Amino acid sequence: MAADNRRAPYSGSARKLIISIDVGTTFTATSFCLLQPGNVPKFEEILRWPKQATPDAKVPSVLYYDRSGRPKAFGAETEDEDTVIEAEENGWTRVEWWKLLLRPAHLPIIRDLVLPPLPTNVMVDKIFADHLRYIKDQVKAYITSTYGSGNDIWDSLSQTMYIILTTPNGWEGSQQNRMRQAAINAGLVDQAGGRRVRFVTEAEAAVLYAADSGSVGDWLIDGGHLILCDCGGGTVDITGYKINAVKPALKLEESSASRCYLAGAVFVTQAAKGFFKDRLRGTEWDDEERLQRIVYHFDRNAKKKFAEGDTVCYVQLDGHRTIPNLGITRGRLKITGEEMESFFAAPLQQIKEGLEIAFENGGRLADKVILVGGLASSPYMFSKLVAWGKEFGISVSRPDGPTTKAVANGALAWHLDSSVGSRIAKCHYGISIWVPFDEKNAEHCEQGRVKTIGLDGEPRIHGVWSGIVKKNEKIEVSKEFSSSFHVEMTAAAMNFDHKVTVYAFRRLAPPTFLRFPGKHTLVPGYDVICTVKGDLQNCYHATRYTTTPTDVKLKKVKFEVCLGLGETEITARLRWKENGETVYGPATVAYD
Figure 1 (cartoon, helix red, strand yellow):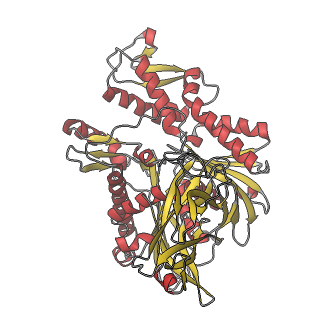
Figure 2 (figure 1 turned 30 degrees about the vertical axis):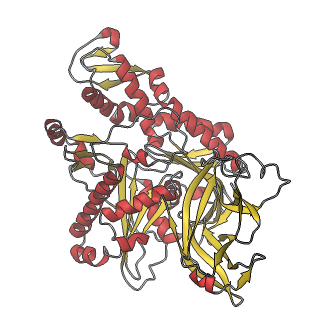
Figure 3 (figure 1 turned 90 degrees about the horizontal axis):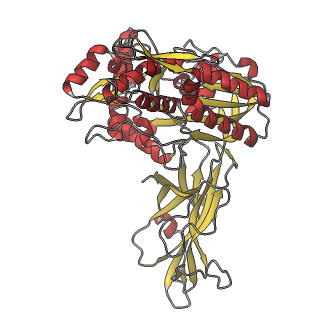
């Protein structure tokens, strides 16, 4: 990608290397930017991958593992005929669609999801790290062979480079934490450099790519509204945006909460595989190995070419047999247009519903939809979504080119430009607190509710929801949200570590209590998001002692937990008063 003349020259005093990696369910792409003082940033895609027949930014997110759990082949290597034969002879296991094993439990699934089994004793975190290590090696090989001083560039800049990883809209802190650790295990950064791994949602990166590409330039109008729909391999990400400014720099804000659906291209493939399995039962093709090859041919031919109005498609089988009653002619299986449409039906319905939700939640202001991602490149899917747009008076555009991976370039733009100034809360965020016991409150008196006595001798009830941010609330990137606490500590206190659990409620209105009476399970809709940990020692020493009516000497340590929720990662710090002055202390965000 050429240097973008709309960007100002890099004003830093030293060179920097930024690498973006878009690991999709089915394909992976990576881009990098070498920032040089005084030069306009230029984005470069990795277009040379081992065993790749023709240059392409995308390689399969597929690996082969041997019986000992060691990775033996990656990316385009897994499609090389010699590698496939070697894998079959040596009993290697093909690993694909593994990214979906990271998915949060709250994501709705449009049908039963059947993922290929992993090799024995190989976990998804190891697969992620092995895959990222392969990507790192290819970026290094590209830079060192392309630039005249490539070895010096890599040796001097790789120790401080930033890594931008993309995530579906529905991935949260827990998934980001595992991805960051995978990047560390892959050697992209060391343990101390974990904060140089940053995350951007695929939808946000995609809309920035679309703006950079120039193909939607006439759509970028101050005050305009649009919807971005990234139809990927496993997930579909949909977000509405308002355009606050176009020049001198693009500035966006979310107009509807980002949503994530498990409705990507693999679900089309899964439906087709079920069809093949039923149609070919009892034939010579009725085994998993041959079925996998049939699915491979379907993915790369019929699935990509099928268009609305096509009455028939063919899929290559092994051999040259003709079986008329099964629709097989000289080793080719006939699929009717209606059968092909059935494969796309469930993902298409889910995407339409998601677009309608984004349209409604955005105040019905959007008049444009940008489609990116592999499934959007399907002629059938694109024509159906264009028809959907006409029903709502919305224009639908598809700027993603055949050899580009939009999200990888958009991730670099996100890191450099900070174009999105506010986001919409996808759920309610809050904490669990205690409140004074109220004998007139029926919920406080429910059987199973535990009443405790504090150090001050007063009764209290625990597990009450205290909201910090409401669902669909606008969150400015720079804004912090705080919640006040006080902790009772005696004069003999020695441990000043304090933990606060942050919860999300994903439904409409949060109930008063997070848990059912007498039970430890959360009420449906509540999830643990993270735990904020901080040291209250300085706050403790700044607090005066009080004496309770029972002559207990204690301190009521008052402080606030400040959360940053406007970025793609949650940040936290503590705040309290010392001698009338506001003081901040560090806090860490931990995930289970």
